[in-house]
Image (cartoon, one colour):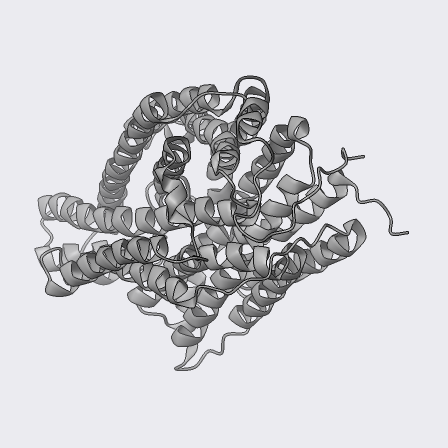
Length: 534
C-alpha cells in the first residue's frame, strides 16, 4: 500500500518547486550591472534578459496548464523543474565571447518556458490536495510564502553578485534538487485527461503576446510614432483578438475563452491583470531607485524591497482568513484601497532623498499589504468561479493573465520611465550648464543596467561630478515617482472593478452553486475529494 500523502508535505514540495520562478523574477534585476559589465551586453540585450523571461512565461502559461491536465500534473511539474534548472545552469555558464548576449537571452527565455510548465501544475496540485474548508488557508500560505520569496531575489542577487554573477543562476540547482526529493516523498496525485493539444492556439497566443509587448517595450528606442512600434502593437492585439475568435470555435481549445463570459470569473481575471501591472515591475523600478537615487549598494537594495514584503506576507494571511469566512470580494476591496493609497503616498515621498527609507517605509508596507490582501483571494476565487473547468485549465488562464500583465506593465512603465528620465535629466543638467547631448548620454548610461554609474558621469561631465550626480539622483527620483503614481492609479482602477465587477460569496457557497469542485470540461476523470492534510 502506498503511503497516504500529506497535504502539508505536498504544499511544501510545491512551494519549493515554484520558489525558483519567483526568485528569478527579481534576482537578475539587481545583478544586471555585473552581468552587463562581464559580458559586454548592449542595452537592448539587458532589457531582454529581464523581459524575455516574463514574456516567455506569459506566452506559454496556457499551454503549460493544458499539458498539466492532458499529460499529468506531477509529470509536467517534474519536466518543468528540469527544463528550468537546466536552462538556469546554462545561463550561469554563458561564455564571455561574441555569442554571450544571444546565449543568455535564449536560455532566459527557456527558463520562462520551464516556469510556465511548472507553475500551473504545482498550483493545481496544491488546490486539489486540500478540502474546500482548508483551501483558503493553504493557498494563503502558498501565495504568501512564494510571493515573499520574490524579495529573496534582490537580497541574494546583491550578495551573490559580489562573489560571481553566475551564482545567481546556479542557486536554483540545490532548490530544484530539494523540490524533486519532496515531490518523491509526498507522492502528489497525477490526474490527467488525454486529449489533442491545440497547437495552432498555442502559436497564436504566443505570437500575439510577444508582438504586443515588443511594441510597447521598444517604443523608447523606436519612438511611439514609428511604424515598427505601431505595427507590433496593432498586429499583436489583432492576433490576440483572432486567438479569442479561433478558440471559441474549437471543440478542445487551448483556453476555453467562453468562460470569460462568466461575469465573476472575468472580473477576477481583470483584477488580476490590473494588480500584476504594478506588482512585478515594482521590483525592477524600486531596485533601480534605491541604487541610483538613494545611492545604495546592490546588496543593500534588497533590504529596501523587504519592507514592501513585510506588509505583503502579513496581509496575505489576513486575506486567506477573510476568503474562508466572507469570500474574496471583501479582501480585494480592502486590498485595493490599501494598495492605491500606499503606492500614492510612497510615490509622494520618493523625491525626499534626505528622508530616504525613513520617510517611505510605512507607505511601502501599506502598498505591500494591499497587494498581499488581494492576490491569493482573487486567484482562488477565479479558479472556483470557472464552471466545469479543471484546476489546471483555470489556473493556466489566470496565470497567463497575470504574467502577460507583468510583461506588459514592465514594457510600458519602463518606456515611460526612460522617456521621462531623459527629459528630467536634460532639464537638471542643462540647468547646470551641460550640453543636451551630454545630458542624454548620462541619462542613458544611468538607466541601462538598472544601477547607478558614477563613472559614466565622469566620462561625460566636466568639472565637479558631485553636483551632476546629485542632479541625476534627483531626476531619476522624479521619474520613478511618475511611474509609481501610475501604479497607484492602476490600483485605484482595480478598486472600481472589485466594487462593481466582482461577485460576493464564500467559497463553500460558490462550490455549492456549481455542484462540485471545478473539473475538466470534457472527458476527464473526476478527482476525488482529498483527505485533510496531516
